[in-house]
Image (cartoon, rainbow, N blue to C red; front, side, top):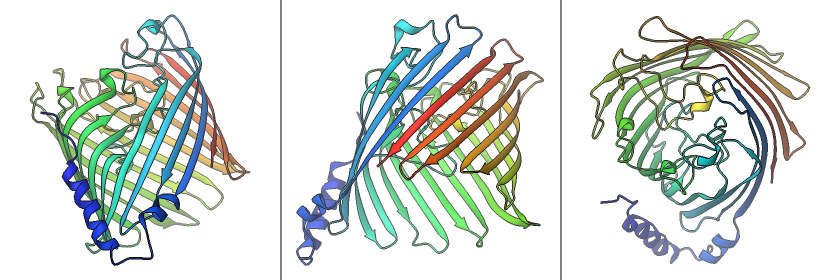
Amino acid sequence: MKRTIPGLLIAAMLLSSVTVAVADEGNTLGEALTSGKTGVNLRARYERVDQDNISSDADALTARLRLNYRTGQWSGLSGFVEYDYVFHLLSDFNSGGGTSPDKSNYPVVADPNGADLNQLYLDYSLSADSKLRAGRQRILLDNQRFVGGVGWRQNEQTYDALTFTTTAISNTALSYSYVTNVRRIFGERVPAGRNDVDTHLLNARISINDSWTVTPYYYRIDNDDIAAFSNATAGARLAGSFKAGEGKVAVLAELATQSDIANNPVSYDAEYAHLSGMWSSANGLSLGIAYESLGGSSAPGMAFRTPLATLHAFQGWADKFLATPAAGINDLFATVKYTAAGWKLTGVYHDFSAETGSVDYGTEFDVSAGRKIGKHYGVLFKGAFFSGDAAAYPDTNKFWIMVTANY
């Protein structure tokens, strides 16, 4: 039986709004529908991929047009709709997920073309500090290491879900989502573009003081379509900062444990750890060092996995480790950032190795330079250069040029 966000709940939200509206003659439904805000975004990107074990290089020139509209509020109720269309202007690439079976001789650039109803939801304000959201929505938790939107790709990952958020508990921002479908980046035309799930996402960010927070979380993912993605993850992250001379040091420490659930064919337990520090000065220079570990095993299918994550943001921009290796992965990386004359410059160096055993996977150097141009425009140059030390991870170079316009 296919699960959906209960229509009765949405009907109840509408009914409660109608009831309140009787006493609220200053706001009408018509005014709410016509007094909203329209958004237009255009993002064009060239991506080139040179991967040693694939005969042809990928050349992708894609553009995404995004249109959205947020209504005004009517007795606590408001709505949001967002539509995307991705164009292929140069399509010498494999768009992934089975969307371009005739392009298997090219590396993957996971930006399939076509239309997508990216978001469509209703918000209902239960009180000044609590809200319900029902429908297709963006869910971004913490740094998106476990739950995110994969916003780097042209077709964003969104969720059919019911989400409750509240700050009613002192010093706490609580979020709970019940998810029935994951709308993945490969689009509606292929099976890989949608996963039916029975998923619960619970996250509570607790402020210890003005500088430090602790965030316990529990994510239970029951995936009907990809059994290996069914797992339960429990963990906590500590984040904060302190002054260091003329600058500031930001610290993050995180631990999590994961085990199989539901239809997962493999019984396993795996661990996750992250520790990082970033020093930032007043003159725009930042220096950071970090270590991230996803546990593995000598047996297949027992590695720590993050099926809902924004994976491009982690373990290198070359995207060599979208699936955690069976032996797990340790990522030791250093970051340099500098801001000058409006440009944001970033360099990152990664050293990858197996968490279990002594295999070296390789190293990667990532660089980017981006800036805003006026109020509405932006430009980004970005590169990733991976050098493999294991046959399963061939040398890969990627380069991007991206321009954006927002209105």
